[in-house]
Image (cartoon, rainbow, N blue to C red; front, side, top):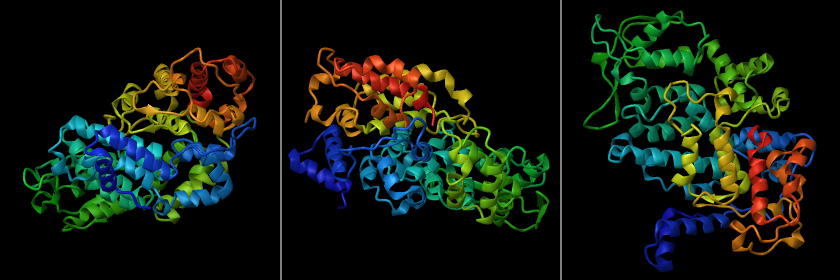
Amino acid sequence: MTVSRRTLLKAAVVAGGTLPLVGCERITSNVTKLLDETIPSEVATACGASVDSDFHLLSRATYGIWPGDLDRIKKQGRLAWLDEQIHPERIDDRACDLRARRFESLWLDPGTCMEFKKPFLRDELTRHALLRAVYSRRQLYEVMVGFWSDHLNIDVGKGDAIYAKPQDDRLVVRAHALGKFRSLIGASAISPAMLIYLDGKENRRPNADSIPNENYARELLELHTLGVDGGYTQKDVYEVARCLTGWSIHSPWQRGVVYFDPGQHDDGAKLVLGEKIAAGGGRRDLETVLDIACNHKSTARHIARKLAGHFVCEDPPPTLIDDLASAFTKSQGDIKTVISTLFTSQEFDQHHGAKIKRPFHFIASSLRSLAVDTYAHKDLTEYLNRLGHGPFQYPTPDGYPDKASYWTSNLLWRWNFALAISGNKVPDVNTDLVALATAVGAIPRTERHDSPPAEAKTSSNKPGYKINLDHLYAHFVGRIPDIAERKALAEYTDENNSPVEQQELIGLILSSPAFQRC
């Protein structure tokens, strides 16, 4: 069944003429349910005393566990699930596409994007990123998109970078997120957004007295490839900058189109990281210097360390770094190979709960675990800004920090979000907590109403249900609560509690240290 946006618009006309946007969204939600974007009638939970290993994999390799995800990985097996995820092109993602393809600017070139206002573009970029994180079945792919977006960070607040970021997201990060590292860096090097952000378009040397702009050359070595301790020198930075001279962006005609100007390029001989680059290379100097940097042994270790730090723990074991660096080198920078090595490693399984969720991950995992229906309007995305994690808005080239210490000062806003989302208090974000609680076995099926009373969203007088805390907690956390957690939540499981109090119970679980970690 292929459902296009045009089909939806036709359906809207048949249903009663031109409908407002909310009507189109309602139709889309109904169609996505037909594509199995729903809460299954029964959902397995991991009710052991410690975090289930499959739940742990899902917590790190996805943006959170959608109801039914644990059942699928148990049925498939971890290796089969991982093989499916590292080949996203094999996964039917039409339901997510229906929600996320509404953003016109994301498919346009930089010149055309200049017809839009910057706040509009930032809004579309943010909403698209969040909707893909929440609804895509290509979850590992989306997680890697987020990883490389930080690795190749571009702050859309600088200059005209925002006009070029949609193309960068589409043709650089998303095109190569699970491909070859060298291809990813090559696409980034001549991306209009990167040329604007790190001043590559200003890197000219028409004569021997001119000084090349070193901004991109420095970050290419320090952040994108070798790493700060990778063994390069200031002289290497200068020589790389010479190699990268002459690349610029057309304006005002062919706005946003990258071109190479031989007259602005330093075409003399260079020496980069001990390797000679002959004079007269012209535009080929770019490819040569990227080959040298991407194939350097320090690059393999830098990418290995960064991936391990992101997916395993802040101070990853040296043995894991060695294995990942070896996989990187042997596969010539094949990202699929490195990721497979990481997730099948013994070290990965030994670090349950070692990472704190960054705000984007926390919000996306909350929305996924509740199986919400949303289109990420401003009332929802504003929480990302309040938590300091708006996509593509970090000002320095190193990207959003991956250290717990950076994020622990925003816990109050996390708690506010958890209680608001579980209480159906975020506009245009809808949850069916009764259906969810029934599916996971937290409410006996005999007590399940076909349609939860409308008063359940606000009333404190409506009788509630006796909650099976183990099943409810395990759905969100991957294990049953310990003694202290059980004691803290016990008052919310009484059968006389109102639906509001039971919503608060879910909000407290989402606020708990156990859910904040993965």
